[in-house]
Length: 209
Image (cartoon, rainbow, N blue to C red):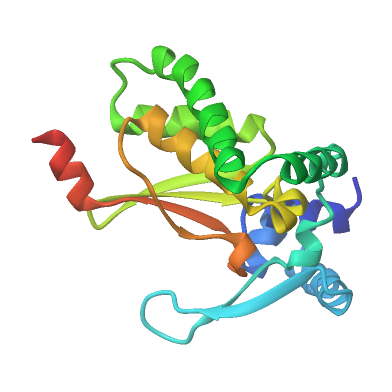
């Protein structure tokens, strides 16, 4: 794998990386990373933004652009899209939506048995591994008594552009495995840099009472 490819893979897994973080990840100096980033930005594969980090001047962080994310497609997206096109010609929207929900609930039933008795953070780690196997780069964090799940490099992006119903699969799956309502607060199909799900403080309090 070339240095350029290593940078792209690192940004897929760690959006919002600094030049120093990228240099450490790909084992080259910061000057070389800056040179590669300049070329990748000219090609439209990488974008940058200023991000505040404590006191002082904001720092520059980098992430894949939508064009960059498309460098990591799922090879089956074209067939899936065609199948969904055919289904939509024959079935009403409510049936299509129910199809995706039922599919996610069916998957979740198997996984819930495996996570029975897990703590919320053990379930989050389980979901992280589960979604990574599906082609996502996934992370989670606890912040202000809430939990946030981050998905990057969506393997459904191409299909989701024409068939946004596929987005319901992950949200349903996460909610069912967690056995807690999960809210989607950002989505790549809406122009956001990543999909983010939130388990709010209110939900956690209600579930624990």
